[in-house]
Image (cartoon, rainbow, N blue to C red; front, side, top):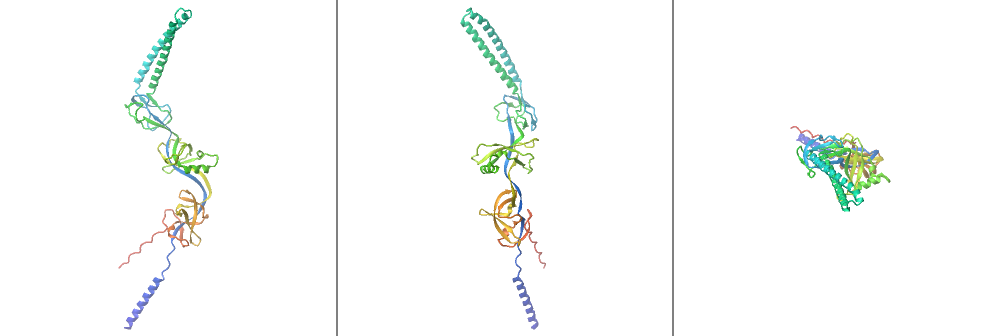
Length: 385
């Protein structure tokens, strides 16, 4: 029996030791957070809007006479010159109208010459009372009537020649010609519902965008007295993110705010010497308003908004956390300007702020954009039976 009692005592001692080890477990590790130093540099302050591109002039091409389309004289999408023929309407009817107007004009010229000669003969006779005053009045009236009819005939001839000229439809501007909306053989008329095509001048190209009333007032205030918003140079960023190499300028501010949207409509002009920009494209318009010297910047994710107040978690030299209220300014890309509450070089938590409390000790690691604050622990291998 004694050996059994000794064994039980040993087992009991081992169990007590194990329980003691469990009750004396080490404190939890400090949470891992990612920190970044408060940067200080000169920062341009800019405003941005989404803009839509359009031709500086969009000439809508429509027929001015009725007739059948017999030729298309340009290649769609090409640059056409001012005065270059684009379409041709069957001219035969209009050529005949010109010939007819010429014949009527010739008749009126003959009648005019006859009445003039008759009046020239009667005037000397009337002066010596060889003919009556009535004969003179009749001759004068006939001459004036013939003159008026000749002028009407000449006007009819000019109209016929104009209509004949309208059978060759030319471009009123130099620009890019669009796809034709009529086919050879179509009957065209001035009252047709669609245009033949549109020619747009694209150098310079026009960019429309809307700015709010608040942005407008801020822009005016930032420029200072005596300067207009139109003097601010503009940058254009295309849909692929690339920056257009030429700067633009504001050309038109609408005279009033649109009451339905509360915005001003603005038109800017950008040089387009290679005709790269085309109507219908979209882009981002940026205006650099000022440069803030020595601005303090932190990642936007390091700033937490709570009930209208902005807070930043600062890690001190002893790795303890201080939750500090700050005054923020403009957003610059993925960063935020902090105008009050931080000092250059201080370490702020950019990842893991939800893990900390004021005064807590943390394990700071350098901030890596897009990387998790800490890797999850690998699962323990299953025990083999």
